[in-house]
Length: 166
Image 1 (cartoon, rainbow, N blue to C red):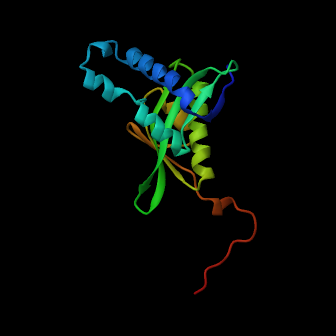
Image 2 (cartoon, rainbow, N blue to C red):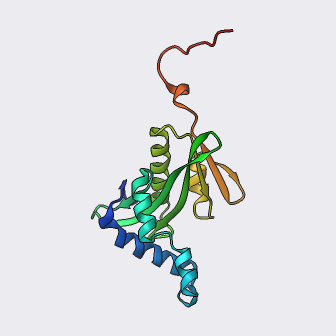
């Protein structure tokens, strides 16, 4: 079992993240390089503009191994859903598609980040590889989509609960 460190990413990580994204696309779709350029670009989650956006989101992370090598990443952002914020996971990319520990760790980092910022729902598309990690977070699964409900801080805050009057 490899231990990873999860941290917010910065611009020096961009090149590695783009290489991981490209390798994952080629692994998932062997004919990726034969697709029209526009479609290839559309499948990538790591354009320079996207990475700059997610770098500022506060909810996106990389996984580093013990040699400080970036081995995977997750991109997520806060969005409004009705009258409250929710966190939307856009991509989870790993150098080793079979590494369940890294997948779970990256998703756990997003869930913790959401809770720490008072965002109590995490929404994500669920691939077969991500299903176990989503279930570990007690996600409500509907087909290829999941919602992780985190409750509220009011449920776990210390002290006596205030009662409503009348």
